[in-house]
Image 1: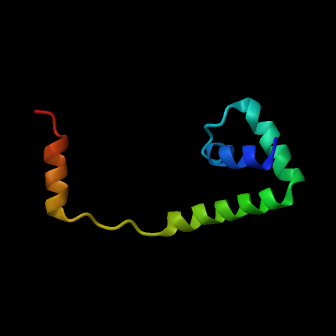
Image 2: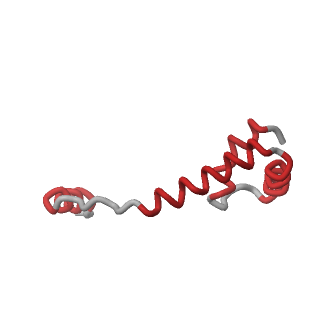
Length: 73
């Protein structure tokens, strides 16, 4: 596996949707490649930080309009 291969598939691996045959090669690459391992650590940290940001409240009027549009008639 190359660094480019890893970059294309890293998010899928983190999300748990990467085919099993890729997982071993990706994990081995992360053990053998310090720059990719550092990128992986940075992305995990970013995911944690993004999860800590409070979601903005949707204005009530917009919520009503969306519900009306999405409700089957």
